[in-house]
Image 1 (cartoon, helix red, strand yellow):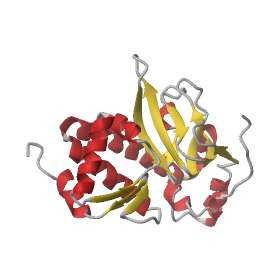
Image 2 (cartoon, rainbow, N blue to C red):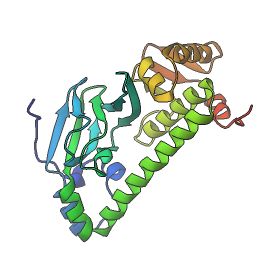
Image 3 (tube, helix red, strand yellow):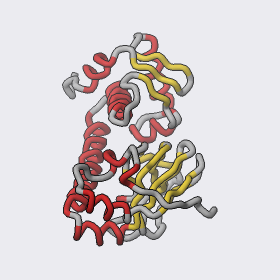
Length: 239
């Protein structure tokens, strides 16, 4: 497929503050605009990049939702993350110049393509950009560490609660509701990410609905008792 591409300016993007440094001078903004030359549309179900593909660019998600995953030795898919508008993808390829996972669109999406050699070049000239790239990489390390802690110490209900709170927090930062969301991923994908069987995920959602914590209509979800979810996540490990 030939991706649809066209010129885009970061300075005019309403998501710029989510994926680019803030408080840049006019001159630096002009330089940053050189960073993104194209946008690419990724239809639902198609890959942005594959495991083993050459790493050339980072991608700022302009619209849509993605999942990243790896294929285990027995052929099963292990979901490693979910990404949304305003977030950066492709960092997995920096170390070895090869992508280490698959990135698939969960709905029709659009990304800004940022060639990494251009990022490195501009980072040497615009210190705020270099700092921002380091910040993004650090954030990913912290997120992965949080997931490992969650999988190692939380019960099923706590994992699902933490997952929902994380999603709503990230969506709220983008101007969406703090209590209502559309789940772009399947129960099976949620289970893969959280280290739970699909039956356990479905049973946990049903329990939350029965207890009045959630209202679920197919993929539409509404959090009725956020405090309950917070209490679950902050509960002592041995409780």
